[in-house]
Length: 602
Ligand SMILES: Cc1cc2nc3c(=O)[nH]c(=O)nc-3n(C[C@H](O)[C@H](O)[C@H](O)COP(=O)(O)OP(=O)(O)OC[C@H]3O[C@@H](n4cnc5c(N)ncnc54)[C@H](O)[C@@H]3O)c2cc1C
Image (cartoon, rainbow, N blue to C red; front, top):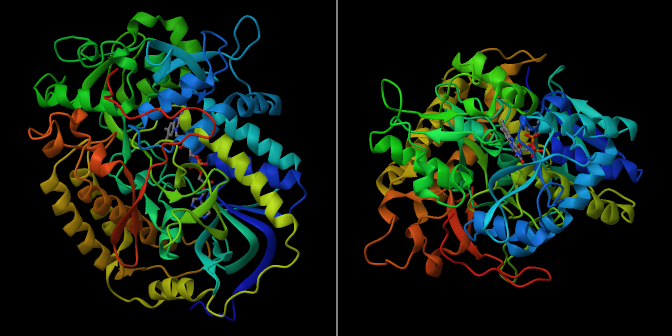
């Protein structure tokens, strides 16, 4: 069996959305409500998307439990981003936050409640009142199952509005015409193995993160960066891919996440001497400093020999003082995870944790309408017509070099909605679909048939493992220039192997081996983008910490090795040439004063 042009099936929709997590579903809702025909594709049933795993909360300056306003949220997000976030997008997101969260409440989201009926809010890392003075309660939560509640709420609203779901479908490539406009995608239906061209007036990528390029990750197995791979192969650069967030509290040895909500509720981190060491690193926010800060501090404790356990290689998170009643009410899943993944009763003893890969700050560059933008000779943000991206696969950029916890669920709601609105406006007046180019499916056919005709080579699982080990080893919490340079050479060599991936089982129906082999094409794009971008950035900023540039002796003025003079700029990585370019950070908000770069202490 081989795939040919003749056996491709073609369908037409107003809009195709690739991904049915929180961001894809929020956008789909806007479109279906406006009466457009929407195809929402997902590799898994929508409510199994990674958004379902989000635990801690969604941020909005509602001020239900402590004094708050969006200006504080705006300031915290910029400082959290280590000034790499674009201030126009950050203003847009923080101003919109209360609206989209109340709207979600009205969709039926089962938030926890205060005695007066308002939404319960807990403190979270890096979120403060009065510009860094003290922690604020800004994370709106449904126990420690906020993502679960949110994804189900959005799914149900979409069912009501009759969104068409294509469940267990895998999108493979973007189709761009001679003008560079996106006019559809190719996709495979996993149940039948049939290949489709889905034509659309607009395509929205909402494929989530790519945490699976690392060996130890809090991410779902489906998080293989497919949207990023599709964009990269279609000539669109990936932005700021060197910035990957390590979550301080993954269960040691298992990688499963324990939400920052634990520390929001009062948990503390201790070293082998029982010391609450965050008091030394961040005297004001302590355990609630942003994630890059806490992860680095934990790693430092371990490096200096104060790690816990027989190998002194983890830190303990202690929440025994919270009491079993609070834990069961506010953190029921965390208690379960403690039992299942660490054999620990968290109500009685501390639990071993280590920083674990969690979130990609970079992605497909967009503006605040979700439109994908590229740098041209005359513009830093030239729109690619017909293509949008939202959620973790996109980079708008509100998270800059380090995301604050709970700002991702917010980003899904704000930009899912704004992209949806923009698509409605632009598609409404477009009566005809643009014609398909003659080579619409050529790249996809080449990818599929390379696997179909291969008789020898390397299995996809081996390549995936090599990618994951390399990334884990060469792009960890603390990086070194030498380590990253070696990582670049290794990843480039692995890329060569990707062309020789072979498939033993070539059957058509429900062939998950084929799906995994196709995912490798995406993993390698993300991994190469990350290594190349990281090795080139000669400074420390946010989650990108390089030993060589920590407090450089010749530049004592650089806070923690951050070099604003040369590196206050976004990275752009191009797949075809494996090369880099840069564009400025937007320090100009929409209506308020800019927050100028300064030293980051907590
Ligand atoms: C364990 C965990 C806890 C978290 N907790 C929080 C939290 O408390 N607060 C917070 O703000 N953030 C949290 N985050 C981050 C946040 O949950 C994610 O960034 C966010 O949910 C991503 O949403 P998304 O819509 O971009 O993608 P996802 O929810 O990951 O959905 C991606 C969708 O794309 C589909 N897809 C992918 N590739 C293809 C393809 N080729 N073809 C078709 N479909 C495809 C998938 O099937 C899926 O439907 C957490 C993340 C993790 C991993």
